[in-house]
Image 1 (tube, one colour):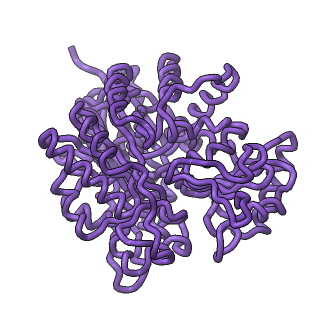
Image 2: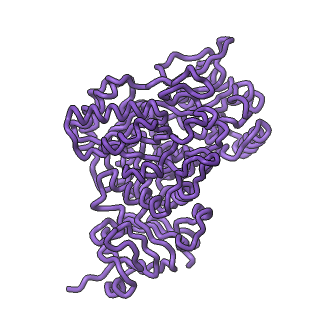
Image 3: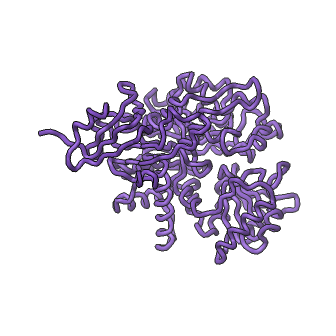
Length: 561
C-alpha cells in the first residue's frame, strides 16, 4: 500500500541541520513526522488527493527555532504593558506615560518595562523624585530592560509599605538613601516583587523567579487572566517560527496552567520548564525536581532540569566578579549561594540524572558554577550531563578551558552584548573596564574551542525575534579597534538556534533537524537567507510555523500568497 503525505512543502531552500543532507528542496509530512526530505519530484511522488501543499516560494525552510532561554509568563504579561525600549530622557518618558494614561483612563497603576538604565540621565540612575514629577498620583513601576532592576515612585513605595526600605537576603535590595528613605531603586526579583505584587498582574508572572511552590489565594479571575497572558506569549513565540521554548523560571502554578492548555488542545508549541531552587531553600529540595520530572513528561510539556541564580547583572552591580568593578573597585557583587550550598545542590541534581542550568553573568559567578560542576563530577563520576551556564557574560581566561574540560554548555544571548542590538555600551563597559572587554561575551571563542553553545533571546529582557538575534550574532563588532572579533557565521548562528537547542534538552534524536523520522516542527521564512545581506537578517520574518505537523501560525502575506 503506497503512502501519501498529509503535508508537502516544496520549492524551498531547506537548511536541514542534517549533515547527511544539509540542503534540500522539499519535505513531506505524515501525521506529526517528516517522512521524506529531498527534491521537489521525490516529495511530489507522495502527494495524494487530500495532501496539503505549501509552496515556499524559494524561501528558507528550517527546523522550528528552539528558544533555549526565555520567560514565557513575564513575556506574555509584557505584551500588555507599556514598553520604554526607545525612550530616553525625562521629557520623552513623561510624554510616553501621559499618552498611555490617556489611552487607559481607568488605570490605577502604571507598569512599564524595557527601560534603559540611563533612561533619565547618562550620569545617574533614576530616582523616585524623577518619577514623582512625571506621575505623582498613581503608583508607577519602571522595569529595566534586563528585568533585574526596577524604579518606582513614592506612590508605589507607599502602596508596598517600603518607603523606609525592607530587609531582604543578600543579593536583593530596596535601596535606601542617606536620609533613611527608599530611593525608588529595587534590585533583583525579591525586591521588585514587593511592588509588582500590588500591580494589576499581581506579580505572579515573576513568582517563578522567586519560588517554585504552587501559589495560593489566586482567584478564578486572576487565573483566567494568567492563562490568557501565557496563551498570548505562546502565540507570540509561534509568530516568529519558534516551535520549542525552554523557560528559565517556573513554578508548579505555571506548569499547571500549561497542563490545562495542553488538555484543551491550546498549546501551540513545546514547552520545557525548570524546577527553581532559590538560595534560601534547602538543597535537598532538589528531589522535588525528580518528582516533577515524572509528573510532567509529555510531547509538549517537560519539567526535567533544575535552575539556579548565582548572581545578578553588571549594570546594577549585582553580578559577581573575580575582581572589583572598574568604577567601584572595592565591590565584587554578592554570591547568591555559598559554595557549599551550590555544590550540594548541583551534586544532588547530578546524582538524580537531572540537568542543571545556572544564571551566571560575572566571571566570579561563572567560576563558582564551574567549581560546582567539577565537584559534581568528582562526587558522581563523569556523565553526559549537559549542565548549562546561562549568559556567561564575563569569562576569566583561567576558567575558559574548564568549559570544554567539564563538558559545560554556554547558553548565550546574541542580543545582550552592548551595542549588538538594543543594550547601550554607556552603562556596561565602564563597569567592567577596558581590560575585561576581551573576556566578555566570548561566543566565537567558545565555539572555536569546541564548547557547545546555544543561542536565545532571554525575552522579555530582549526582543524575541530569532532572526534579529541571528543578525546580532553575525554582525557583532569589537567595541574598539584591536578588540577580539566575537561574531559567528550564519550557519553557526542558525545551528545554535535550532539543532543545538534540541541537543541541550536531550532531544537531538527527535527534533532540531529536517530529516525523516523527526518531528514535523518547521519554520518557513519569507526570504532566502542566502540572498539577504547580513545587516538585514533581522528583517526576515516567519511566513508559516508548523509544530507537530500542524500549522500554528501563518502570516498575512502567506495567507494571501
